[in-house]
Amino acid sequence: MKILYFAWVRERIGKAEEDIDVPASVATVAELAAWLSKRGEEYAHAFVNPKVVRAAIDKTHVRPETSIRNAREIAFFPPMTGG
Amino acid sequence: MKILYFAWVRERIGKAEEDIDVPASVATVAELAAWLSKRGEEYAHAFVNPKVVRAAIDKTHVRPETSIRNAREIAFFPPMTGG
Amino acid sequence: MSFAVRIQREPFDAAAESARLTKGRTDIGAVVSFTGICRADEKGEAISALTLEHYPGMAETEIASHVEEARTRWPLAGVTIIHRYGRMVPGEDIVLVATASAHRDAAFAAAEFLMDYLKTRAPFWKQVELASGKVWVEARSADDLAAERWNEKSAAE
Amino acid sequence: MSFAVRIQREPFDAAAESARLTKGRTDIGAVVSFTGICRADEKGEAISALTLEHYPGMAETEIASHVEEARTRWPLAGVTIIHRYGRMVPGEDIVLVATASAHRDAAFAAAEFLMDYLKTRAPFWKQVELASGKVWVEARSADDLAAERWNEKSAAE
Image (cartoon, rainbow over all chains, first blue to last red; front, side, top):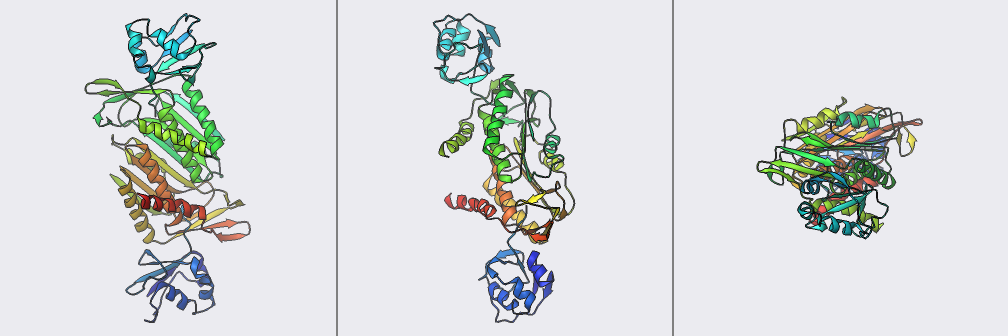
């Protein structure tokens, strides 16, 4: 599964994207964030306050409880501050 | 007293401005409009529906009951349609 | 600070006027520019031209006093208003309101406030040329309502 | 009809973009243009530059879908949105939203709706360069509230 990181999520994890084999037991966006945060200190730091991290599946905003089944690309990022 | 007319008030009366000696008994804007409307058919036509004619004294919007004492310049015109 | 009101027969350059508001400044985060343009129809009827008549002297003073009122309501860094008079054909610019502020809410609100005023209270009168002849445009009650809301807000504050 | 969304690193010409919306048309009575500009301060602190990061692909699609939503809400004759990414210094234009319609209320409302969206929901992230170093700007709750009001309106209709 392709996972993208933006802004300070990207900076904390230290990479903009990666391909990861996610176990089938990880079913939702929130579970994926929890699973990632156990991969190392940099991930734990990025997801220390999971409520402020937003996500998109295949370039569409999703909620923490959204299923990641069939997702090709999942992105994690802080609240948007454009314009 | 200098009196100005704009838009269809001007067209109906047939002039853009004139200097008139207004009797001292004419005290308010509404009374001036009524007095003017007796000066001829063109005036009567302009003031046929006095409620839709607006007025300004010395370039400030005024109400029908406003006194015309001390006015140097009085203008009559339809509701504004700028912009 | 740049606050300017111009009443003129000549066309204007909306882009250059907006650019002037921000030139050399780094405290402006938002510029809103409204351009009113002569359409080829008025209330559903085709028109070939419009003519705007105004009350010289009163128009400038009244508009300037509304710019002052906008400055007391919102933190503005600049305002430019240009209103043309005379005859214009469809496609020609009629009026420009440009506002500048640190933040977008003030710039948007001031531009709408000033346009609502110009449509209903500024001493301008519009005549259009229909196929059947020239007619004076009647005041739209929707425009009056748009201008009224600012008074309601003020009264409610 | 001209509806365009561009995400680009390069500066844009706000004036030329607004002019393009009305070129050759006589059914447009109102053009509202909003330009967002890099200020020399962020929440009271001096900044020397900002950098905007975005999610390529998602940004274009999301913004275009909000332009579509604006078209269903208001009768629009054209919309142009340009959002830059990369590093910008104070005084540089960041974002442009230009809307065209027969009447001013639709043009104003659509421009505000689209700006509220861009500020809160479009996938862009802003980092500023303070004297003390680079920091990511936190989302402002005022901006979220501004975007929320469109949902409330929709729910109330």
